[in-house]
Image 1 (cartoon, one colour):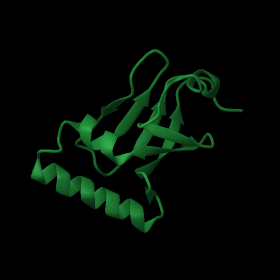
Image 2 (image 1 turned 90 degrees about the horizontal axis):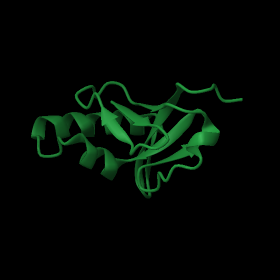
Image 3 (image 1 turned 45 degrees about the vertical axis):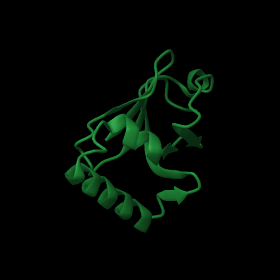
Amino acid sequence: MEVHIAPGQAPRLTAVEDLKRFSVVAAADPAALAELSLDGVLAFEGQDHAWVSVDWLLAASGQSGSEAWRAGFDAMRAFAAKHGWTRDDPPAIRGHVVWQGAPPS
């Protein structure tokens, strides 16, 4: 699963069927993304990681009604929790940020 963020665009979720990988793909440099309104979707933790809202992931997936997909998502979340990559308030999963714009300094 990949969360794509770019200036001038709403965040979007791709590869929703791939529940073995999770990352945030940033198509800009950090300064350009600082002006995006990402409240309720994600919050950066430094330049290497971001916390992504579980509620947003479920809504953006378009798959929350699928029992099989939801079971896979819950398994992904449990795996992430074992490694300390989840938080409860608000519920979020930590993803690695892949920078496609200028590399962070």
